[in-house]
Image 1 (cartoon, protein in one colour):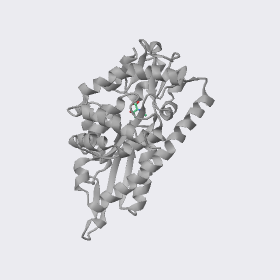
Image 2 (tube, helix red, strand yellow):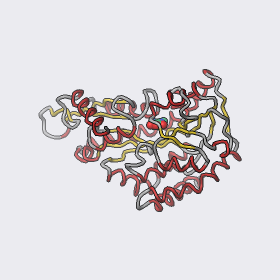
Image 3 (cartoon, helix red, strand yellow):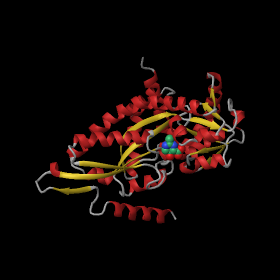
Image 4 (cartoon, rainbow, N blue to C red):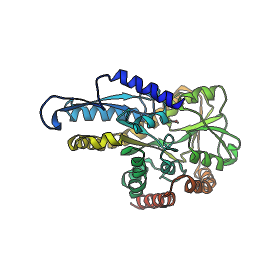
Length: 352
Ligand code: 6CS
């Protein structure tokens, strides 16, 4: 079934880009890579207007401008070519050249990324979390290489905001989560975290979360504020809990073989553009999430719950034993990754 779906997408892509080979649309005839033109497919896992879409649109704008039109980027949001895990496969097998994915979608393909599904690990301040993603030697050494082994070249890491709960009930302490059917992305590490609170984590594809909430097949879900607003989850939930137990981390990657075959000048255009997009995305992240929170408050009667430090701390304590699950799941370097990331976070937090 999965193979059939990939085949269908490949046929669709072939029809869309008939005449193009491997994302290069041709050479005008002069020697050197300077005349080569490119048409790239860029997939992401979210709706138009989302954080990932902002990232993709800004990347397209900058690189098309920097390359004076030699490079064209076509963006495919979630649903057009599949959902999160389908998109990772398209990127791995080179059917698309570039894509954004997250540790929910790569949890079984690159198990090392499950470290980002650990609660209360990255700093609670999103700008500090961003600094960890930018500077962490552990990510470079172990996680980027794990992506590489799966045919993906990591180009950037960024964070989209805190993960927050929506629910059909008030949740202030782990005991309130007993038996709570929370929709999560399909990661055994995420499942272990919610099981530690006594909840019943249930994976559901992103595009089916709204209807599953509406039909009461699940009791709640977890996502950043911008996503809760744009996917309209708040319409079918009574409570929004500002829980902040983890931040949503995203990875921008190229297909490894495609990346390696690109001329150095084109790679540089990409890496220069990525540096600018990383700045941009972290500037818009907090505003986008805050604006969407205000929009939800204005457009619904959802009850917003701000947890106190003590209430958050009770979840922190309850989550700690579940960290060990990463040692089982996170591949041969799991311990080095967990210990290293804890140290990298401490290094960022100890700066003034
Ligand atoms: O919950 C999910 O499945 C999705 N949430 C976001 C914010 N991005 C992509 C992911 O698939």
